[in-house]
Length: 286
Image: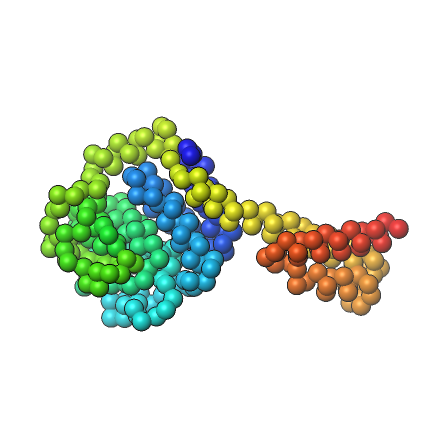
């Protein structure tokens, strides 16, 4: 399915909002997902997987204590949310606390390539003097010094705990130790061609992925509808109680009855809100 870059970005942000991700984190996520998708790395599939991980409770809506002294504990059963982690590591990179340090190792990151893409893109924009090397599960991402370009290749070094497909390693040292692989997945030339194609022809996104993102995005409409109904119910109840803020009559009881349904997590709540709203408005009109 073809989508323009702007349409794809809008859908991605709406879907993230539907899952409950703060808009600031989604603004950090979008460039990485779009870049990966344009370069043939299934960025939108990964973004959807990261949102599902949050929505299903496999990864918490929380930031982590990311320090070299205290890497994420691999014994924890929960996954690390790449959406939250990419924002944290991106901030650390901007203040100079990532490049030049020892290896930062994270296990069980739900979609490590999203984090890797965020870091190398930001590193290139910052034009830092030190290179940056990121190992994201099955691919190496290398950003050359002073904005010299990005290289994505098959791993050329032995990975610790190689059976873990959610491993993320970040290092400046690894950039010096990593040897150029014959299995180049992306270089400056192929990146330029891919980005130009995305700009002129749009992005090719899997139809099932688009449907999944739209499903999350549709929650915004449900929540907005419930919010409108909730306000109408309160207003109608207020009128019914003769405009007395402390009233305990029928209008107040209507508001209390609708309160549990306000979150709009299921259609039953919407149905109850609609019924009570209709009932209360008929009382006012009568």
